[in-house]
Length: 331
Image (tube, rainbow, N blue to C red):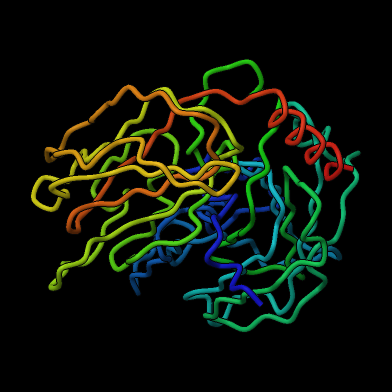
């Protein structure tokens, strides 16, 4: 079975995820659940409410019921698995947890989501303290927009990771110039030569990279080869503009880059020949391609890329296929 933790975290804060409500956050804030970094801990650091935790922690429950946190995913998608991480919670973790999910269009409030069609995607599961629990879901094909983390009865959870495949709403892709390589539009990295320092998925994230850690960076090559990443576009389309951004990569940018596209018939064609790059620079190249479905980025010989953007348009057939896929999986 494919390791679902290699898929993007649909709930992480850097993709727009948000904890929009919780039953209680007396000891530690609910927002910590979606922090992108690894949970941290400094012993004997006490605030007015007790030991400080990089996680979500509720009060000791003295009444029936359980605690919960309601999360809006940053990107809608098919959830393949979740990670419930109780890092550093050793005497105050919940003994059990479950996860529910729903699809809700528009921008509903927490109270409006109470009437949504919630589906249990992770049944009540036994937890251990200071442990990352990777749990596959029971509904991997349906598209969801929100999840609800339940813990029984109370305690602390450091992180919730919601790994899955982005499924874009086609209404925001039709008739527009869009980034066909954007993760939020459904593009994904199929494979790469090296992910030593960071994942190539980072190149497809929204916004600008704030540090070199927010891009894709490979180890230093000691042979005659070069590094590469293969990207499946959001859908087959034509590319008019490519952006290869080395922002923040001042001493480890590639010397050159090349883009090779794959057509629907499997033919490979060079759309950007091997071209010199500069460090810490946003490079833009006008292109004119036929309909392509994949693009391979080759960097020479190694280094880092902050962002890759491939701006273009989708033909009617691609829009129709995306619409059918979306409609079949939101119910």
